[in-house]
Amino acid sequence: MENTIIWESPSNIALIKYWGKMGEQLPCNPSLSMSLKASVSRFELSYSLKKEGDKDLVYLFEGKENNAFEEKLSRFIASLSNDLPCLGRYRLKILSSNTFPHSAGIASSASAMSALALCLCSMQEAIDEMEMPRDFFLQKASRIARLGSGSASRSVFGQYAIWGEVEGQTESSNYFAIPFKENIHPVFQELQDTILMIDSSPKKVSSTAGHGLMKNHPYADARFHQARLNMADLLLVLEEGDFDKFARIVENEALSLHGLMMSSNPSYTLLKPNTLTAIDRIKAFRDANQLPLCFTLDAGPNIHLLYPKADEKVIQNFIQEELLELLEDGKYIQDGMGNGPTRIK
Ligand code: DP6
Image (cartoon, helix red, strand yellow):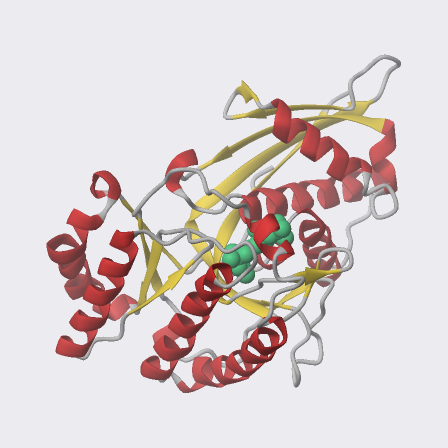
């Protein structure tokens, strides 16, 4: 008999960046992210008892074979036998798809690995015929997602999530993410994120390789210290509602991330000329109009433009009039804060 579990899980955008890891996928500094709503991965996991000669895993991405990712998933799933003892006895079939285009430059590892972790934890529950307490289930899923991709640990939760130990946040951990729910000011409760597609070509240096370059980075210690200070400040700002302070911290994190890439050995750049032109225009528009608007960047050239729901109209006009011409085929994705993963089946 074959059983099927389906989860949809979102991508997230880090406001305090995870950049540099140690040990078994543990972060060198804590990070904080906002879960997205529209940029989602869907994972359909079917399992049946293994018979002799069966392949352990069959994987299809949007209906097509993807051998490289199938192998990566196979290795990852095989490494989870202690956490999920049921896995060895079953053959798995995984079908996955994304709501965002493959070439959109949106990191799909966070949404994919969190969706997979949730499916695997639900499978363990079904086989054990016992539901885990909800908090425990999410913590376990976040820990497993982290092992697949660090940033995926945060996608298990909606709204804001923290991964890594933070002073004063007694539940926080390097092993899994936790939701950050403390009195978020209304201005940050329905934050919009317009993802401006500057360039969707594949990255020259993967995030995993970038993390590796933090090992001997001359500014590593200063960076990890900076992230902790920015985290402490941002947690207060999220409660106070001061958008200017929010913008200062979030933009400092984004540019520090790219500064670290430019100053690592070997050094590299992921920003494009149009990224910088767009940043100049965003700052000029903000200064001229005194509007709550700021940018952040992933490990790539595309810009996440963040602003409150209340200012959507005027900022959409600004995008059309001043930013569209800088975008690849005029493309952008309208997204915003989401409420986390959903179990479909
Ligand atoms: C710049 O989570 O993709 O997006 O753990 O090696 O899979 P791995 O790296 P990944 O790194 C994300 C880096 C970042 C910042 C962030 O999301 O915090």
